[in-house]
Each structure stands twice: as structure tokens, then as C-alpha cells.
Image 1: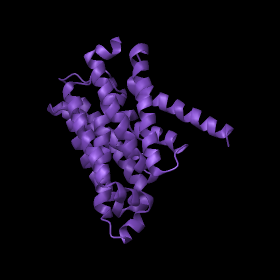
Image 2: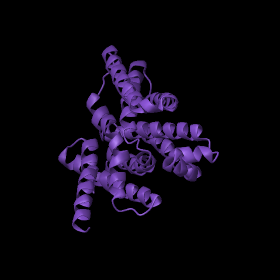
Image 3: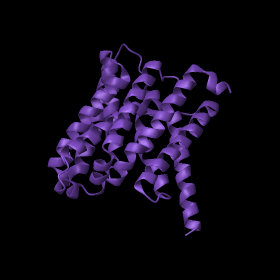
Length: 266
């Protein structure tokens, strides 16, 4: 197939597979903790990181990773001290990240800035360097969850009980926030900054309708993520669509079909 022989599509497939595995893996913990929207907030911070990186000549993915990790740590520290205002804190970082991005873009009068590819993803902009960074960050995310799966699961179901049981909840929360930030940074090239959060939520939402355990939710989310990426990239290539939009729409269609099927077979 022609689509498998082109270098840029090979990079897109590999990056898409990594994203399809990592996003639902992390998203399962976020959905369980009722933090589905944190990816959006970190996406705005990643946008500021990319814009600032372009202004200073840094690699975009690394700049986004540094910005989102810093933002995630600060959000988590503030959230633990102002628990009653956690939604306000997230909104504050939403707007601050977007404002910084707008300012940085305005200051960048020399380098070309492909805004559309950053916001909605682009098959053409995934470089070999981007793929290597995504692969390393993806491997780190898998190892992190594999080593700390049980403490993270306990924390996600009941943070208070986990604290009483002696688990280092603050450290675990911070590490999970950092991992979420890295996931946002590594996923933005393929699905775009504005839709990266959807890849952490939509496949998990599809899986939750059929799964009978948390492990089943994670595995099902990965399966739906891979299906969304596979069909979405095909649509993006042959119909000339933005890959992020195509991937997320495929996932949304899967959710609707699942939901209607469940209604009819109650």
C-alpha cells in the first residue's frame, strides 16, 4: 500500500500507535479521579511552551514538555492547598497558558509558525526527532504505570483512604500530574493541542460502557484508541482532513454506537 511506504506516513503511524496506547492508559486514572478536563488545561500550557520554544529556538516537543511539566507541578501544589477551588485553579491556568501563547506568537516576527498544525495536528510535521522523543516519553509512561499500578489505583479510587494507609499521596499525585503533562506534550503532534485531551477521555469513555474491571477499562481504552488512530489516519490521508479531528470523531462515533447498542440490549 502506498500509504505505508511514505516516510512521513510511517512516522505518523508509529507516533499514532504510541499515542493510542499512552493516552487511554493515563486517561483511565484521570477519568476515575474526575479530572477529565485537566488535559485541556495542560494543552493550553503546551501551546504556550511551543510558542515560547519557537521564539527562543527550542525543539517544539521538548519545549512543550518542559512547560506542561512545570504547569502540572504548580497546578497540583496549588490544588492540594485550595481543594475547594480546584476548578477555578484549572481555569486560571487555562487562560494564562493561552494568553502566554498569544503573546509569544505576537513576539515571534521572524520564524514561520504553523498554527493550524499545532492546534489540530498534521501528518507532515512529525519529524524523526519528534518520533524519537515521543517513543522515549511513551516508554517512560508505560514503565511508570507498570511499577506504580497498585498505588495509583488505590489513589484513584479513594485518595483519603490511600493517605490513611500510609501511601505518599502527594508524591503520587505530583508524579501522575507530570506523567499527564508528558502525555499531552508527546501527543500534540498527531492530534493537535486542542484535541489532545480527547484522546485521554473518549477511548476510556467507550471502554467504560463494556468493561467489567479497571484493567479491562485500560485495555479496552487502548483498543478503541488504536481503532480511532488507524481509521482517523486513513481518513486524514485519503480525504485530506486534519488528523486530530478525524481521530477524535472516529472515537466519538464508537462511543455513540456503543451507547445505542447498550440502550437496545438493556
